[in-house]
Image 1 (cartoon, rainbow, N blue to C red):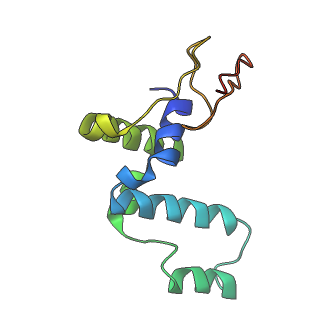
Image 2: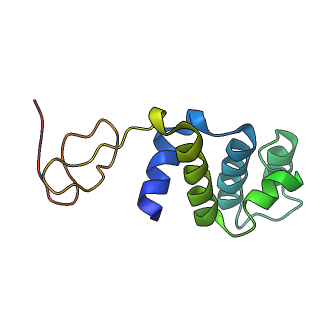
Image 3: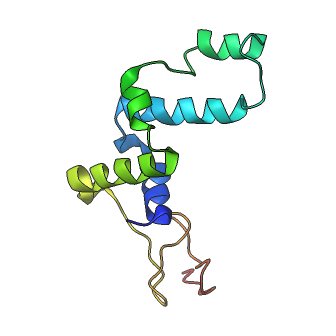
Length: 115
């Protein structure tokens, strides 16, 4: 599976993620926001206190090969367990994946299929 497809599934079908996968996403986003913050900074403490950073081995294990690999793994799991709940909005002209499930214009070839 390519990264674009994995990101599409994880982003637009996030209700199909497990709690642990959601925590991994929250942990990653929090780490990105806190990238240049010292460990003793009040903001860092607030993130830890509110549970936006995780030290759960299960969460960290999901991210051990990086976020992109995590997205691909999560998307593959979703497809293998609940393929019928995932809708791929492919362009009718070029067949490539549209940006969102509701998109009516292709970002690759520019084709529009608005009613």
